[in-house]
Amino acid sequence: MLEILNPNLKNKSLVLNRYGTNNTTLALGGAAVTAINALLQELEQEAGTTRRVFECVPEAQLGWRPHPKSLTLGQLALHVATIPGVIAEMATHSPFSAAPIPRLQPSSVAELFAALDQSVTEARKILSELDENELGSTWKLIDGDQVIMAVPRGALLRTLMLNHWYHHRGQLTVYLRQVGSVVPAIYGPSADENPFMPKQG
Ligand code: NI
Image 1 (cartoon, protein in one colour):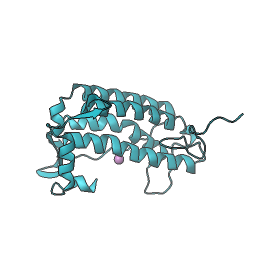
Image 2: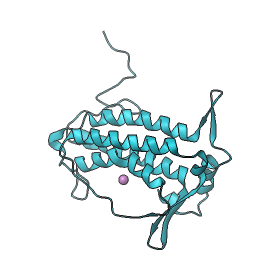
Image 3: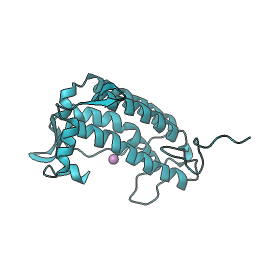
């Protein structure tokens, strides 16, 4: 996050190479897929995993928070639910004016699933309509006449729509452990779930 705030860092050129207009296809097993299709596939896969994490959210604990400075379990889960749609939508507006993020408290787990479905539908639609060349164009976040962030649109989608989504989902699993719920396997086994071990008996 800090790296992409500074447009002078070397890292920026790596991002540009990856999403630049001259190199937007990735060869995978002989078949060329576009960078947008790669983002779309990842979105679908991770939406499924996020639903599994939401299945472990206990409704009675939505107001729990680990520290006075932290979001509640419900606020954090709702943030996770809305990230793909909100960031994809932001990517369609440049310059985008910075505004405080509302921290809404959901009253049910059903609300989380509904918000996630809506958010993923929105992100899917925006990505599907995006021109591959637009991934390399610069997206700017501004506060008045100050530029806070300037990155290629593809980098915004990679870091803020996806990586930032996983960051908060990982944080959410720590909350789940702390409230005594089940922690699902995500990229590897958890103490409660190990899909990689053969079933016994
Ligand atoms: Ni966040």
